[in-house]
Length: 299
Image 1 (cartoon, helix red, strand yellow):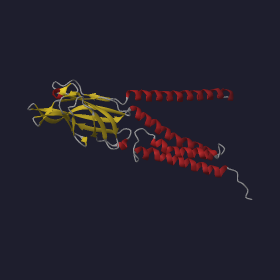
Image 2 (cartoon, helix red, strand yellow):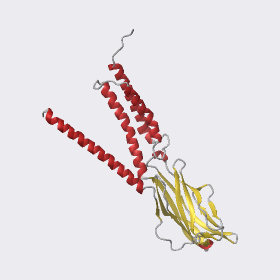
Image 3 (tube, rainbow, N blue to C red):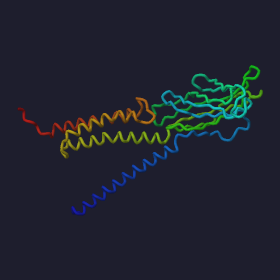
Image 4 (cartoon, one colour):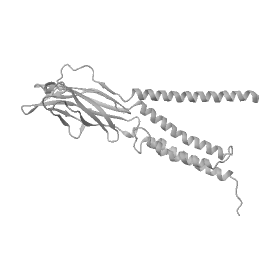
C-alpha cells in the first residue's frame, strides 16, 4: 500500500474514532440525565386501601445519613379519624413509632391543624460498599388517643411519598406477626420496611468520576514511558502538569456523590493505585529528564 493510500485510510480511522468517542460521551450524558430525572423517588408498595382504618398518616423521607445509618422522616396527619375532622384535631393524637432513634412516642396537639413531626429511623447498612450500599429500616406506626385516662389504639393506615435527592427509597408493608388490640379485638399490625439505595444517577456519576480518575495515571504513564524511550522530546514543563494531576486526585475523591467514607473499597482498589500510577509516571519522567537532557559543562 502506497503512502498516498495510507494517508486517507489513517484519516478515516481517526475520524471514525472521534465520532465513536463523541457518540459514547453523548450517550453517557443522556443516560445520566435520564437517571437523574427518574431517580430519587420514594416508592410506596402499600397496595389497596385497608378494609378498616381509623387514622391515616403520611410518612415523607427527608434525608438519608448513610454514615450514621439514619433516615430522617416527616410524619403528618392526613385523616385524624375519631380524634378530629380530616386533618384538624379536636383532641390530642399520639403516635407510637418502633425503630426510631430517640423518643418513640410523639403527640399531635389538639390546637387545630396538626404540624408535621420529624423523626429518625434507625437503619442497617454498610456504607463502605458505596455506591452499591443498601440501608434497611423497619418500623410499625400505631396512632392512639387517650380515653378515660387510658390509651386506645387506632387502626393506622400509613402511606409513604416524597423525593430524596441521590437516593431511591422503597416502602413495603411486611407481616412480622405483630399484634395490637383495637376495640377489644386483637388484630395484626403490618410493619413498614424502608429500603434506601443510591439512585441510578448517583451510581452513574460515581462511575464516570472514578473512570476519569483512572484515565489520569494512564495518560501520565503513557507520556512518561514514551519520553523515556526517546520517542518524544523531554519537556520540563510536563512535570508541573503531572504534579497538577497528582494534587487533583484528592479533590476528585472528595467530590464523589454521597461522600463515601475514607477506607471504602474505592480507596484500596482505585484511589491508592491512581496515586501510585501518578507518582510512578512522574518518577519515570524525571528519569527520562536525567537520561536525555543535555549536560551542562561545569565551570
